[in-house]
Length: 67
Image 1 (spheres, rainbow, N blue to C red):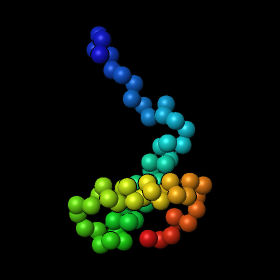
Image 2 (image 1 turned 135 degrees about the horizontal axis):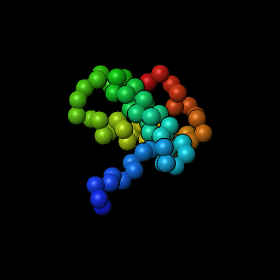
Image 3 (image 1 turned 90 degrees about the vertical axis):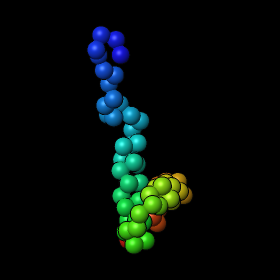
Image 4 (image 1 turned 180 degrees about the horizontal axis):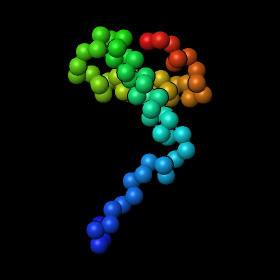
């Protein structure tokens, strides 16, 4: 960066709703992880599964199940 200035990385300038979606995907990922026994090494699989669920039901469909 020039003159010691830092690039503004404030997420508040992100697309509307993108922060909420990431948080919701993270919550769903955590629920999947817990449901599968809280094992290690499958974090990416769990994240991608949660993303697929949100893509399948973008308007708030059945993904709200407990597991």
